[in-house]
Image (cartoon, rainbow, N blue to C red; front, top):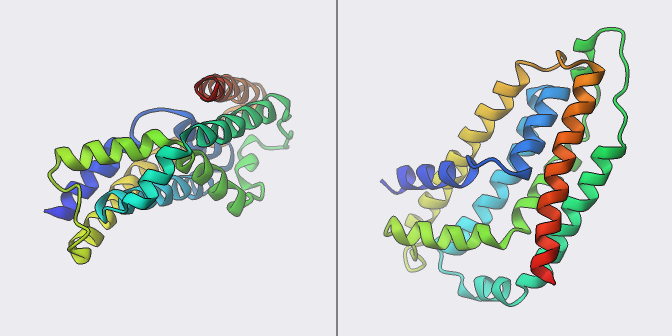
Length: 205
């Protein structure tokens, strides 16, 4: 039952569309599902860490996050702004065959780190975990570490179910965008990143 609750929590937290989902979908469309899956793994790992904070009742960490919320907003907003500018400036590389674009080498550590940083720098994620776990009556299992570990594992599994679905769903279209479609996708994603980044910086102000 705890694993099932964790899976539901992971799906609920991952499914809403946002910067991380767009980034995962973009990488799947351009580079193929494996690149999107690595990106999703970064987000799922961040979700797992926040789930552990909530499930194990690590109030020291949650209190520290609350105390430094403005700084986290600044870092997260800055990362989104930088990523948005990068997507505006990047130029798609032409290939003889559009389908070859998905075969370009992908920097896996960068793909993982970017989505991990974007997810973990969002303090709303922890607040959502705390509220959701309380709703599921599984908020604080700190005195039962084995049960808490099952719940955290469920969250990771549920999150990965979403990222697998998104990566392979979008990856089916990999290589079909063409250069014009890739430019349009980059600009659309850039606008979303810049918008969320500006919101984070305004929260800091």
